[in-house]
Amino acid sequence: MDIQDPIKTTVEEIRKVLNIENVIGEVIESEDKVMIPVTRMGMAFGAGIGDQKGTSNEGGSLGAAAGGAGIEPVAMVVVFKGQSGPEGVKMLPLKNPDPLTRAIGEVSNAIVDVMAEGRKMGMGKKHTKKAEEAKTEEKKGEPPV
Image (cartoon, rainbow, N blue to C red; front, side):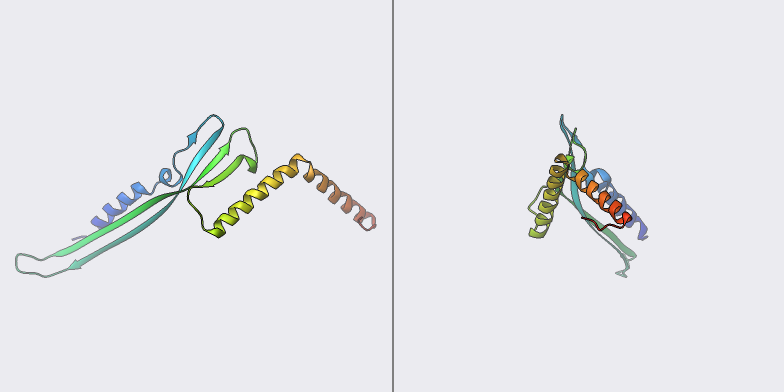
């Protein structure tokens, strides 16, 4: 028995499962947002062949291959239409994350919110202007204020 046949069949079947539509998912679109599902996938695969002598009626080679894959939805990426920049995109977990993952997600969302508020108040422009003034003063030989 040729080991390539069961391996080829198993790989072809696994390939059907492991395609981009299953990892990212089909886009869901509404009036004000686009939602993109994200999944986690796992896969296992094994194959083997052996040569076993039996009675005179039996004999020959034995071969087998097996594989499996699992797909689990983990998050939804939401893109809000009409909102540009990082505040227009949110990542929504679909299951309870571990404490560290939850903390990282909350901190990153808070940073995006603070940056968006700062831009609304013109903070980025003000600080950039002060930095440019300091560089100009340094070139003149005066210490920055």
